[in-house]
Length: 149
Image 1 (cartoon, rainbow, N blue to C red):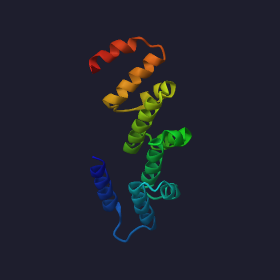
Image 2 (tube, rainbow, N blue to C red; image 1 turned 135 degrees about the vertical axis):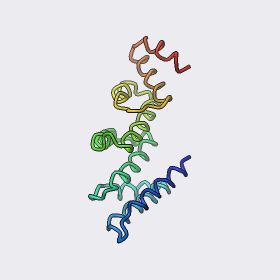
Image 3 (cartoon, helix red, strand yellow; image 1 turned 180 degrees about the vertical axis):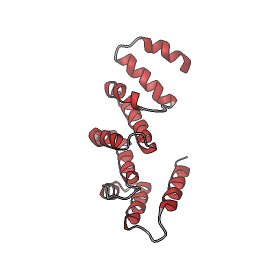
């Protein structure tokens, strides 16, 4: 599944490149390679926006990589990205990853606050949201969970 996502993303990036090549294109492609190979330092170096139309992608890759390592999460940077790219597919994808991270860590207060911003939550996120409600004292979450069983 991951490989197919990368293949689609690579195809989208390739199709988005102008024939003459924008100077920023190389940075985007290098960031994609750094994300794919797990080179966090290089990815962070390439992630800052430069005005390129595909700037959200390197930044998303860097933040997604960060969310995968709970100890390294910078919630302020994640929130900033989610606000700047609100309504975009990348923001929705990062929000889902962030909610999963919060659920795994048991950060029910922050999860409950962020969940309503998720436009199309998947089943596991709905379960985390119900668990957050329970942990925050909402006993009606038990009844709301019944259809998910």
